[in-house]
Length: 101
Image (cartoon, rainbow, N blue to C red):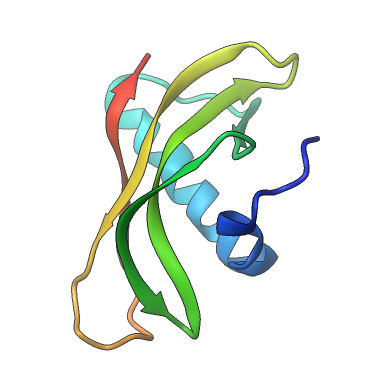
């Protein structure tokens, strides 16, 4: 496993796991529903859309990859989000943008 870039590492393991679960669940809208998938954060790039979420900088990232357990690329795209509340403790809605399958 690659070392996490600071853009993702600063979220902490709980928030990262939560985001990964949302992104993997969102893939079902595109016909991909598998249990052997992992999010690869190793090449992410900050895209400037951010907010303070529970005391950490949470921002959209490009070059997020989805790989199977053998390492084969399944999908790639941007992780983006929308706010549903001005409250910093309210979870954003996380989704794929510019998804390439």
